[in-house]
Amino acid sequence: MCYDDSIVYNVISDVDAVITSRNISSYSEVLAMHNHGQRLIVELMQYIEKEWEAENSVFAKLKADKECMREYFVMVSQGLENSKLFVATMERTLEKVAVSAFREEMVLKTFREIRNERWLYDARFMQKHMDLYLIDLLQKKEVDKVLDYIDQPKRLYQTVLQRLIAEKVPRSDEEWRCFVVHLKQAIEKAALATLEVDSGRAQDFVGQLRNEFLHGYLQSELLASVFLIDCRDEYQDCDKEEKKEFLSACTTKLIQVIKNQKFPPKKREFAKRFGPKVVQYMKALNDPAALPRCDACCTMCKSLCIEAANHDTKLTPHDAIHQPAGIAGVHCSKSRELISTTCSQSYEQDQTFQLPNEDENVIHKFRDYAKVFNGWKDPRINEELPLREYILAKYNDDIAQKYGFKPCPEIPPNYFRDLSTIKRQLEREIQN
Ligand SMILES: [Zn+2]
Ligand SMILES: [Zn+2]
Image 1 (cartoon, rainbow, N blue to C red):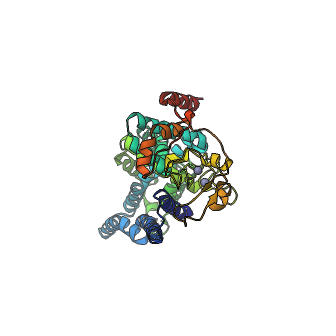
Image 2: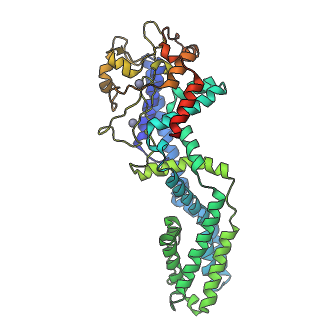
Image 3: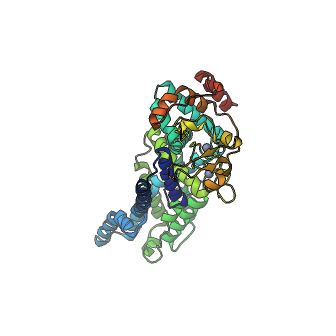
């Protein structure tokens, strides 16, 4: 995670959503919820700060280098030869970064694997994957889990996205072998290029290594950046050594460092931990052609926004394919019965609504949806969501119980569907 406006936005909309769905209306309770939201934002920011500091602060860097500095001190104090000192420094530098550089390369490779996947950039297509995931849960009789996911669509999106990404993470064992080969080649090429120089050999070798890491096959900025070492004054004695011997010592020791790394871990664990890093990378890269979806959702029916992450709501407001609102606990304020219409149908029928955190005399028109919900488009997309209709029809009583209201008295007849037919249809659409 990194500092991002969406953190504040998401907490505010989550808190608002809870206020709406739990029908909280007393001033003191709403105030308590807002204070809670404020605390959450501060906690999240502090967490992000802590994570960053753990990796980047001066203290963290000193701590990470403590052992290296101590060893270096011991070697110098023991009067170790200049060239051996140089090789030892190179070894430790590579040792420190090899695995992270590999992880970084895996993030990039996974990103390249998924960047053209339709589920990444097409919200309607992703919805089909999410619905299939919910169908699996329903078939395992995990109805509560399904209703919770509908209540927290962001969590559903993240779960399904991570599963889809995990399927695309390249095999870590094969990739590691390939990475090792390229790393060795880069080291050997750097040594070969250094053979031609007579003075400033240590510095030249470091420069050639950086060049190979950055512009060779690996193209790793991380590897190149750690070898940004100034050796001009410190290792002049290396020039006195026999050139070939010096370079072969460097090469052998560095390659040994790579051989000593215990990698890779088990493929499944690795793929699991990887998804969030890839998502973070994509969001930071912010390439409009390869971004995950925005995770804002409709305050009323909890349908997810269909635009891309980071979209500017001033240019492109949030928009959604609204689902039968009762599925997320939306109910008639008088009868307390769940409603079966979508926000778009209510818009068409010029219906009104109230918000639980407002005075009960305040009544809004669905036609004013975009004015009431800042940053959102009016609900104008009218598309069927067969699974969501099925869930409202089939689990009407369970939903009513979950939210503490009455079941919907008039479920439209077309909502009663056959689950396996819905599943087959979704699978067909995904395959096409
Ligand atoms: Zn809606
Ligand atoms: Zn959005």
